[in-house]
Length: 182
Ligand code: IMP
Ligand code: MG
Image (cartoon, rainbow, N blue to C red; front, side, top):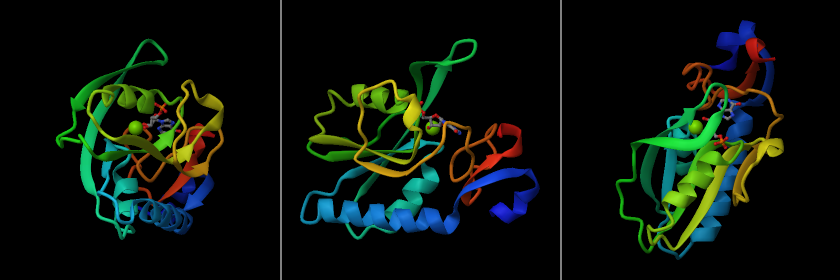
């Protein structure tokens, strides 16, 4: 799905498909440089939102990588996430002795990354890094510094490229603010 396919409901285009791909080229080059001559890292994608980012990033890499996926959903109280998650799918690979790059499409409060970091504490991974395509700087609650960040976004609800609006528009190739969220 392209931005022009839904332009009547888009308030603002933050990043086009080409802008996202250009930045992913740069981030892939950074990872290639980091892992040249080293053991392949595990790219650990957080389902469902990270799927397009993992796909587009990994196909740009020259370095070998392993894939794994974790699916979690956040427990909500009446209005806000609690920071606790239900595991729908946990890791499949044994990551001991490997570096892990946890990949999510957006780093917002940091609850997701902090929780995954805690879960991986006893995994014997040699290093855990974080990769987020987008970052909302104003909302961090944890002392987590992702090594790889694509773009900063304003503290508004954004949609596309894995980010959903009621589970839809994850397949939008671009990042937008929808009129309903503007
Ligand atoms: P965090 O745990 O607060 O850092 O947020 C990470 C998760 O919140 C992401 O993986 C998204 O699923 C969700 N999220 C945060 N901001 C947005 C947004 O603007 N649009 C859609 N989903 C979002
Ligand atoms: Mg998510």
